Length: 309
Image (cartoon, rainbow, N blue to C red; front, side, top):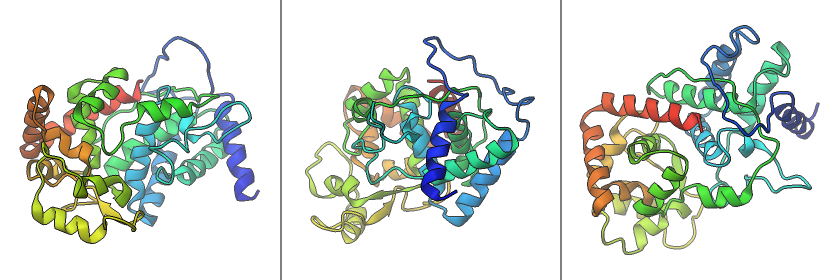
């Protein structure tokens, strides 16, 4: 089966039979696949082991894929769907276009699961577990993932454009988008710590360098480093690590960077901005900067909470 045919096959598998349009919340459980597909978690982990060994950046990409999935219609795998005659998918949303990646990793894991227990494990659960494993593979915390999500049969480009935070979002805008998903300010600060790994394109942080952001802390030496990577024009696809100090280690350095004015994105550095909300987020940033265990605990709790959307 060629690559395009397999991608179509995976999409169909994601729609049946592990799909649902029921209007009530799903009851998730840690042991959901214990009898129907007992090796599901180990197969997902093996797939992530291979993917991250091949490309370290993939861990952050899968984590981001999960985040962008959950913020549109809940964690239902809708981000994986291609355009159809009846709806436009989420892959071309402003926050996803030429940016979101890792689909082939999920496809590969799904293919292996189908060979062992066909039609059982949803793509939404694969993405959720893979995101947890991505964190683990970079030295981050473990948490149990409640399972039993159903795959969506539709997607929403409009919701993707409206719900997913952008790199230039203000703190108030960020908080509004998180609250809309039933998440708190504390969840927002902890989940933003996912930016301790991964990279961003120049187009995502150019405004951080060249536009006046008077209420944001900025380290001059760090800005000079960024200018060398991202000129004021051109070089749109040039990459910079979200955490310049330990870019492939899931730790609390992201928060220490923010304290020092070294957040790559405007939306990152907004966590230390002034104002009513900024005074609260700044304190959380400072606490996580000195206490990695506190960050790991809140991040784990917030990931479970987001995964239940």
